[in-house]
Length: 86
Image (tube, rainbow, N blue to C red; front, side, top):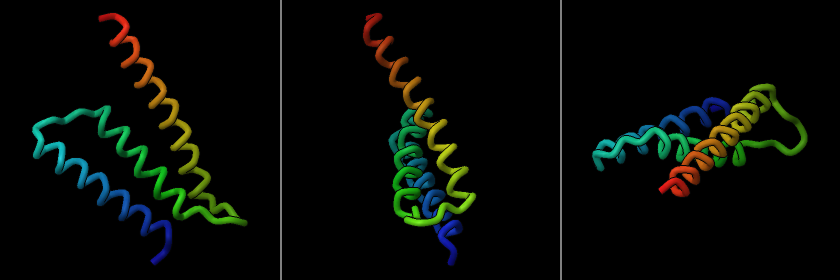
């Protein structure tokens, strides 16, 4: 099995597990889901990263991670502003 396919399967299983736990806890929060997705994709990319060559799909995933980190910064900023306004 190729690394690309394995990474997609592992990330899908991770997201299903997160969804099941959120449904069981009766707490569906898109921010928590996003942060846990970002953690999962960071771990998957770190484990499948190669030393000497960078496949094109890995480059695009790293762009996706960069956008996710920017959104994560926005979420953190929003939470800080909520705390300061109370």
